[in-house]
Image 1 (cartoon, rainbow, N blue to C red):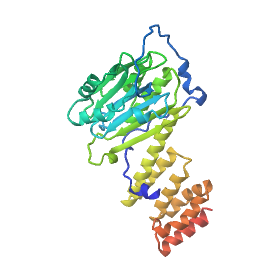
Image 2: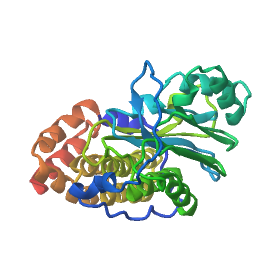
Image 3: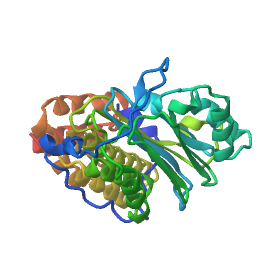
Image 4: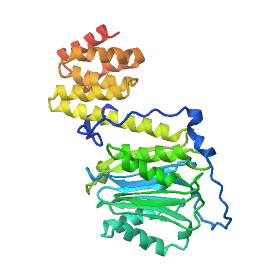
Length: 358
């Protein structure tokens, strides 16, 4: 909705940072190739039951040392894994709770951290109180970058975790023992903002083998490192792929789309401030990121035309109208609700647009 575009504050789009590295995804048919990369497990044992279905998976929690942003991301061969695994609160911390999932680790862990406990202290307290700790796997990080990971003794092999500087990675039911080291190495060696580094860790996990069953869903949640009485305003990314043959590829696509909409929001704010050069820069960046989006071209055109830059807007209108004539009909309706000026001049703009961008 256009009204949402006009009022949303741009978040998560860091123009002072280098562009994220371009990623060439593997062919969809080859995406879950890692499921055939096995190490043989020679030790047989028993598995403790749980009242919650398992989310055997790999995940990362991390704090951006530059911005203080906090994030958690996951991939699994389980439907809608993000609904159970990913938890974060602005200015507090981030939690991943997986294996035989106990979802309460998310809100309880964040509440303990908000109350003054460090991430390792909060995790230790909850694990000590959990009679089924042996089947849990957890990652915690707090707003100071203190991190912890727990892998219960009865998590399905291969299962392991690693704590680094400001992050923790963990995985269970992996095809081999390479996943956790690959995630840590990728996170530490990748440059860029927090989503870029987190996604690099997930990519690395999949590349060396990933979940022994293959892949199905993925999620990423990024929040600000700033505490707020309006925590919903400090959420920077909250994206889920519930069911897909190549969930990380789809998650990358959604992150790119989210960044583009951040640029659209920033462009709208620039227009409101009279910074048309800045607005054009943001709109151009959004269009380049998602070149097939008629909607992005259209609303950028509306904003520019409404502020007198009709010549710059006409090619954008033309591209949107070519994609779907519905955009042309919508243009006729905009003056009635003042999204283009409801004046003789504004109506003249509409007639010019419809004439020159048929």
